[in-house]
Image (tube, rainbow, N blue to C red; front, side, top):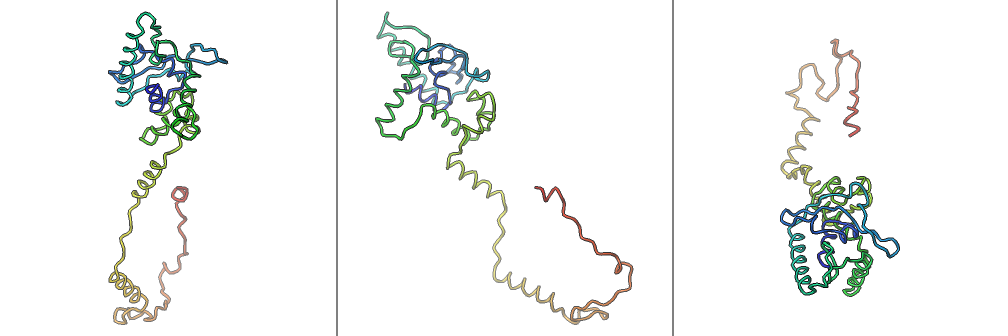
Length: 245
């Protein structure tokens, strides 16, 4: 079942979609699979049905590792077919029992639980691999619309609210990238600081020779008989759009 778990973990198929996947709906040379049907469990009875939503019928691109995993799986299935000869049950499905019979989705989940217990992993649901696929795609740069289409969700809200929690590494990378967008202020040297202080000091206590004849050297303001002196003082209101941003 390695290729089945790999497909769910990296491309986010539902359990029933993976179990019902047909070779006729897979084009490994092009790196594509089409989800056309799914297996539904009712009690313990299994039946074939359309995908969960209208958006569930979709074509998914496969990465090269997933393509190779499926090719190795197909080669092993061909060997099993030869070994079982006339006893082989031809279902056309990608994932089957060793004799070609349909995999029961419930048994797939049961085997997944056995495996994570054998290697002492924390409890994890098979469906959590689908969550992981969405998170990996998001961390790799896929936007929510891309992830919605990959998972076959009917609403992008479901994708945003349920399936995308950023990986810590991706969150850190985004934080660093955002910080680099802001220009850093250059450090002020002691000389520059001294020069700035001298300029301020000169502004406070101006050179008497530079002061106009009719001005107060200590900074006092004399009355100026000009129309502009009687103009009302106004304060420019801040730009509303800038404030809002």
